[in-house]
Length: 223
Image (cartoon, rainbow, N blue to C red; front, side, top):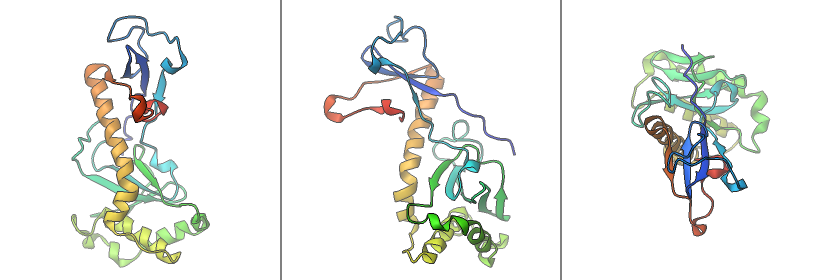
């Protein structure tokens, strides 16, 4: 499987009383044509952190990626997403029509949700055994796969709830898990994708700085 192409880094700088986003700091401001050289600390360019990560470097995490292609290329906001669970070594266990897959490549551009919250780090030594034993049960045989009702998300959430039950914790339903842990990260990823595509199309993207009443803007390294 071919690894997704890495995206270009996004830079934000302050000029013409605007926030300007681009794939690098131009010599001249695209708005006024004047030199962009920073004179004050608050005008210095900052790098916008990418919301994607190499899933194979994430241990004990819930991952999302487009079923086909990558977030910064083929994904259009409506395409199907595929999810999986990482082992302590970054192998991604995921359920498909072919049964449980164990991917060592292919998740290099993912949205990651760490699953070992404070208080659960004691599970680290048992995580891989739990994942292997869970994946070997008959519930995840290929013929049981149903695209809408018994799919990759069903598999991942069932495993998470299996671990929670082992620790005496209450299970999470799909809506609760999605709203609490997934939506905040996918929302940030969506904003980043929109910003990235806007810069690709126009060469730059401009926003107004926040007013003092609304607090700091995205200059802290996020978008």
